[in-house]
Structure formats: C-alpha cells, structure tokens
Length: 291
Image (cartoon, rainbow, N blue to C red; front, side, top):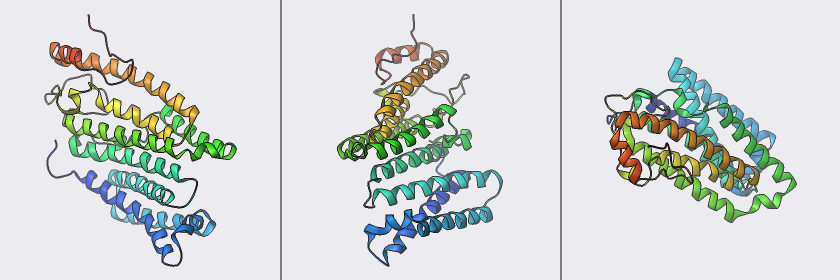
C-alpha cells in the first residue's frame, strides 16, 4: 500500500467526483414542489435538460477557477464520471422503463472512477490520466457505443425484452462481484499492480500469491471479464452478451500470455511453481505453456 496520505490528484478526483454528484440536487429540489414519481419526466423534458446543462456548466466554471493544467484535466474527468453516476441514480430510482440503463450508467462510471482512485492509493507513481481507462482502446469505445445502440434499438422494437428484471438483477450481481474482485486484486497487489504490462522488473516487484491471488493467478482480469459481460446481461443485450464474451475472452487470453512471459522472466521457478498450483480463473485459458 502507498502512504497514508493520498496524493494531490487523488484528493482532487474525490472532490470533483462528489461535485459531479451534486447534479442530484436538481431532483431533490424538484421533489420539494411535487411528487418524486414525476421527477424523471421533468428531467427528460426541455426544462429539465436545461437545468442539468446549466448545472454542469456552473460546475465546470468552478473547476476552471479552482484548478489549472494537469490537475484540471483530472478534475474534469472525475466530475464527468460523478455527473454520469448521479444521472444513473436519478434514472434508477425513477418510475421509468429505463431503470436498468440507470444501473448500467452507475456501474460504468464507478468502474472508471474507481480505477483511478485505487491507483492513486496503491501506486501513485504510475498515476496518469490513462488510469481512468476512459481511452482504453478504440475497440473498447466501439464496444460501449455498440451496447448503447443495441439497447436503444431493441427497446424500440422489442420493449418487453428490456423488462426482464430477473436477468438484469443477475447482470447487476455479476457487475458487483466482478468489480469487487478486481478492486480486491488491485489492493492486494499494491504497488505491484500496473495497468500496463511491465517488461522490466522493478526493485519493488514481488510475486503476490496471497489473498485473492491464492485462488486465481489473474484475479483483476477475472473480475474485469465478468464485470464487462455483466453490464450486457444487465441491459438484456443478447448480441452484445455474445460479442463481449468472445472479445473479452480473446483479449484476456492474449494479455495473460504476454504478462506471464514477463512474470516467468521476473520470478523464474517461483512463478512456474505458482502457475502449476493456481488457475488463471478464466474459462479455457491456461496461460503461457512452460516446457
């Protein structure tokens, strides 16, 4: 673990995320003048949209006053994720058939923000804007957009498909368990964790085999794998469930093989013995073969 004091960027990200969550003040104020069950209708109409846009503009103006340069870039990203999480909560607790998409918005925004915050806690030396994973890859972005399109089109064509609450609850459980496992892996690995596969061993690198690493060799990948599929189960997106499963499996198979080459180079027989005892945790992925 890093020191007890959180680095500046981490503290700024927390304040900015909470500031983004202040978008929840709009429906809270609105309920003072009416019933909670029509707040969502208000927010999706022109006055509500204007209120949200003005609120976001005011928040951004405040961030511009408070921060400059790289710190502002951290703040605006964390704030954006806070706003998204807040809007997701509004949708989740409103009487609307978009409830499950609200769950998805909360899941997606919290995942990306928590990636940055946990990195700031455990390994601040590697902390950067990339730690948000917002620019993970073109493929990742296309996958996200594809899931939004599928949800919208199927909601228009087959609205009953998007009302399978039991299936969305299963997806939510997959998301929560996957998120929990990934963050447990990051916290257990501490300064050994890095979003980028390392090709050179640092002096601080040690082979972590305790905690969740005693059950899976790659618990952070296992968590991310089931989290990503869970988001699509939550949305009841049959096409993307299949697509995410195949794409994620192929990505992690290649990533694990690449990473294990480095780990064998770093730790030699120690890692080979660990590899024999502990599975990867992902279906039909055994990792790099050792003769």
